[in-house]
Amino acid sequence: MILRFRNRLYAVAFIELAFAAILLGLFEFFSDLMFKPQMRIDKTKVWPMLSIPVCWEEDYPDFANEKKWAQNSVHQLLELNSDYKFGDWSKRCGAGDENAIRIAVADEWPLTDIGYRPRGSAGPTHLRLNFKFAAWAPACSSEKIGADGMSIREHCIRTIAVHEMLHALGALHEQLDPKLKERDPDCYRVYDPILICEAGDDQCGQHPVALTAYDHDSIMNYCRNGASGNFYDLPVQLSDADKVGLKALSAKSGMFE
Image 1 (cartoon, rainbow, N blue to C red):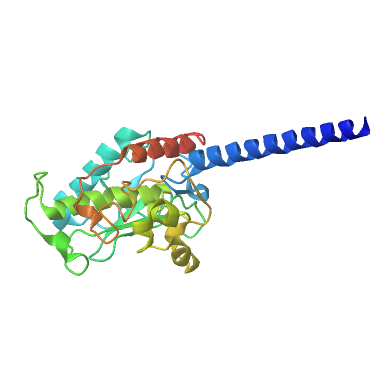
Image 2 (image 1 turned 135 degrees about the vertical axis):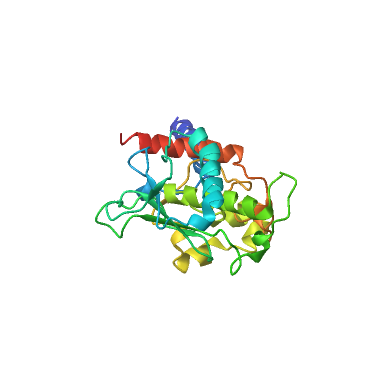
């Protein structure tokens, strides 16, 4: 009798352990499914509003067309796929434009502060674009017309503008996914996110979170055109997953309003 009771206890304990293991496996599966990074964002840098003013550090009269290209692509890809609004981009930045995205133009590597920088912090969100491509990325300086009917230079300007504006909204580089080695081995051979982030790259974010699944085709992914390719020569477009992530990001901003 005692032996039968003991065996029954062992059976119950085994069933409970098996059930717990199944629940743990399901939790890990769905956590990975739901929270793998697709559009990686810094959760502390989400803008607290959806209407975000944009201004230019200078008038840049020699780049009137280039300014329109940048604004048009941001409108077509970001504004029309989210609730964000950036105004008409006509203003030159003044001393009071702290809660704004302030755009400068220089023949340097395009660079942007990640997300919202509240008044009294390190300053407004700065965004730098390149319209000439003489000193940096000279391949983008070509006026050769591509298959999409625009010059390579215009193509680069439009793609970079969208990429950098997403940084300004709080989005991080896709290839800095900590599980990149398993998710995209070819990309990992060029971009080791652990080494990059340990070196203090700002693009890793202070508090990175994931919105959906890893996206090789994201406009935020340096490996979009192969690990060593120039992703700026691909179509000026968001991936389907980018659109999902952008809507989720704007929904977070909308919670503050």
